[in-house]
Amino acid sequence: MQLVVDPRGVVRAVYSETIDLASLGRPAILRASRVEPDAEGRWTADLARVGGPALGPFAFRREALEAEVAWLEAHRLTPGL
Image 1 (cartoon, one colour):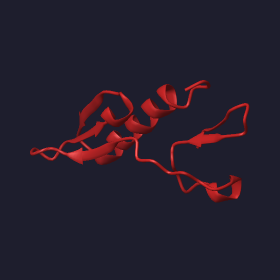
Image 2 (tube, rainbow, N blue to C red):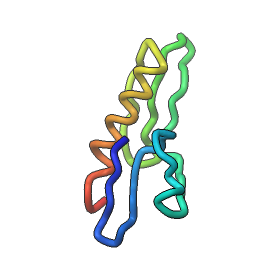
Image 3 (cartoon, helix red, strand yellow):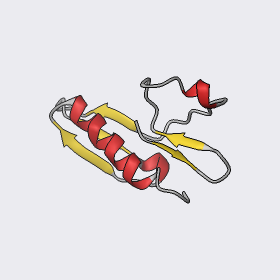
């Protein structure tokens, strides 16, 4: 789990239950994307809510979730966003 702390002390992360985020302060959890199956049973990660692309299709949901987290960490957790 990647945590980014800005100069004001605000912590951002892609939600995970790896650590208790409440231990860092009151969490504000927002949905950034959706991972959904298509009509053929393939999986897509839709990042439109945060101005991102649709990733996929993937054969397995796990692959879509991994791609979703990788994109969010690379594009939404960079300092200054």
